[in-house]
Image (cartoon, rainbow, N blue to C red; front, top):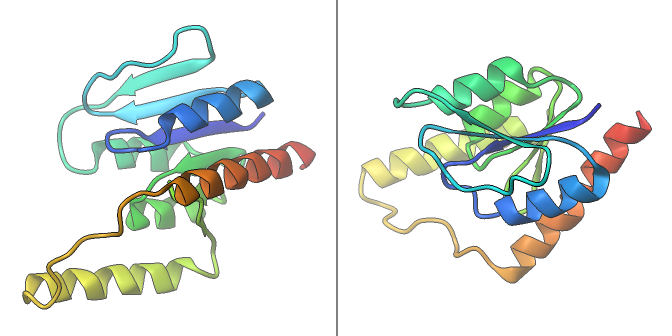
Length: 149
């Protein structure tokens, strides 16, 4: 049975996850280190991890399986989940795959170095309606694919 893990602390698409999960009747696991509101009338579980860097990431990476869809913008978490054959989506709808994760990690490291050197001072583009729409479509497609086996 598919399930959705959400790296929930800063996830901008939680409401969209709830809608798609309800439509497909699959559970959602919100993982975060601080309490948050969520609908109580669906199969949504909140998992509070200890405070600390990467505690939520560690929980998700340790518990996801090939039947999991993981929602995260964290490229290093995406890499760990791909190693466990999970399906991984960014909140923008971009799928992280075995063939794309290497470039994503390299780009992340390069941008981190450039920021450290003061060469890059801006962050990612603002989250858009197109990102939200692409995410909904990607999540629906990923779940449908897992259900088909």
